[in-house]
Length: 185
Image 1 (tube, helix red, strand yellow):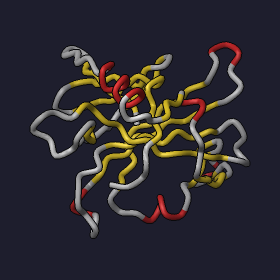
Image 2: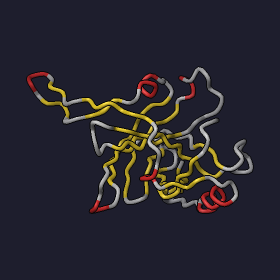
Image 3: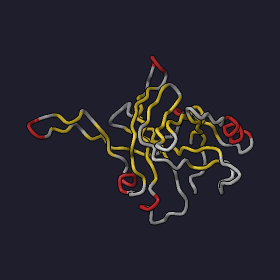
Image 4: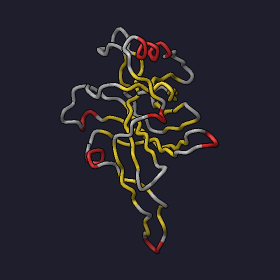
C-alpha cells in the first residue's frame, strides 16, 4: 500500500508512514523491492485483418485475476528503476473494486495497483498493492483505510504515482512509502 496526498488539497500523510513503521512495526519497501508473488503469461504479437500487426507484445494476468469480476483494470503507465541506469522495466496498472460484483462483499476494498516486472517478457511477475489513506475518527478502520475511487488514469514520475480521482482531481502517492501487511480484510 502507498500513502496518498491530494494535488491542490495537500494532506500531510507523513505521520501515517511514520506510525506504520514505528508503532505498528510494518516493513517498509521501495516499489523495486516488492516480492512479486504472481505470474503473468506472455501474449505474442497478433496479426489481424489484412495482415495488420495489432500490437507488439502483451501479457495475460494469472487465472484468478482474469476470472474475478469485482476487480476492474483501468489505467496503465510505465516505469523504469534507477533512472538512466535502469535494469528493470515495469508496467503499473490501476484496478478499482466494484462491490456489487463481489458475492462475498464485506468491506469496500478501494483501489489497487499492480506492479508488473516486464523486463523479461518470458518471465513476467507482478504484485497487487492497495492504495490507502489515513483513517479518521469517524472511520471503522483504526489506522488507514482504502481509497474508494474509480482510479481511471495513472502516471508515474520519479517516485510519485499520480492517480485520477473523478471526485477530487488528481492524487499523488509516494512510492517510497509502501508497507507490507497481512492480506486479510
